[in-house]
Image (cartoon, rainbow, N blue to C red):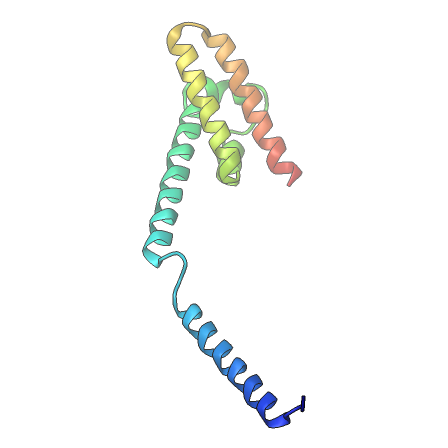
Amino acid sequence: MRFDLWQSIRLLAACFLLTLGVTSILAQTHVVSQADIHKELVNTAQTRQKNLEKTRRLFSSDETRKAMEAAQISPEKVDAAISMLSDDELARLASRADKLDQDFAAGRLDNRDLLFVILGIAALVLIIIAVR
């Protein structure tokens, strides 16, 4: 058995060229299309906007604003802090806002209880933003 240097070089060159060809073909095909990425980004932005609206609606009533001012919590700071929350934090807060609305509509909470809960949530939002 004899070692042939030229045959080994040719085999190595063929493997190298084959590898280059395959990687260039794979680089041209995308796993996810740009249309899918765009659609996902639009859906995420719409979901965030809906969650922002739900959360801001929770803090927008006159009674809530008066209660926050009485507790020395600036409504403007709360509004600014809400927009700085991450998508996950905002989604959790929006789901809690929905639950509060449902509980209040069902009569499980009166105005006083609702204001206490909203003040607690406002304080929590400010704490989350301050910790960052």
